[in-house]
Image (cartoon, rainbow, N blue to C red; front, side, top):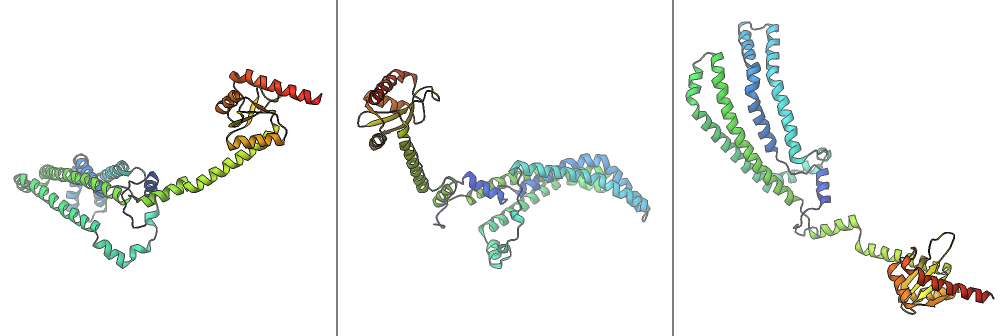
Length: 345
């Protein structure tokens, strides 16, 4: 049964269990591509704010090598550029991950697992279908990115040659512009490849959590209970309810019958009830048991087919009769009270 083919979509419970284990549909390529693009887009802004300052500090550092004061200036200038880039990349990474999978807090992937250090398992993973797919993706990604980057360099080659002949402050702008264009093209291509990878990862994840029909049945038993056990419990509860109902027949004032098919036991207490109440009702063999209990406890039995059918259809056990049946029930109750008075006389 365990080897049965998994053809069924995963249930919400299966998805929740996979999420608790840290198994979600996500692509690390999207994180890398978005962070790279964030670096590229933020770089011109940061360089405009602190690039000249860093270059000036570096030039002075070459002139006054060994100065501790100058080393501090270089450090602060570098931090002025790196910290905004790192902060931006961190925020972008959090946002991208949240957009993919939401908030996932799971320590299970970090738990020790002896299977991870099993040489045989490691060898199988090394030559598995997933490893082959990842290798093909890496080769394609590297090839496409290298092709796009080389194309961008060739398109701006004259500018780069011209910049190499300029003094550093003047060469900074064409160099940064060239790097920006290369980075932008590479980042956009990387993002497109990452989106395709995310679609593949989602398809692969959905396939990995599929369930067999046997697993669906087992999950249903665990969540809803075994249908056979539930049926037996339901039968037991119905049996207990019937026994309790039959025991209440002795408290009834009258039993209205069909006279064979239906039987309804009524009780009326002026101090606690607004109207007569049904304490037991039944059809067929249960009606026969109600009549037997009535005879056992000397409860009057009154044949009245229309009233018996109406009471059985309209009133549940424990409910008071509706106003539409007051007149008919009052006549039966009056008849019973006359019988009691006659017996006492």
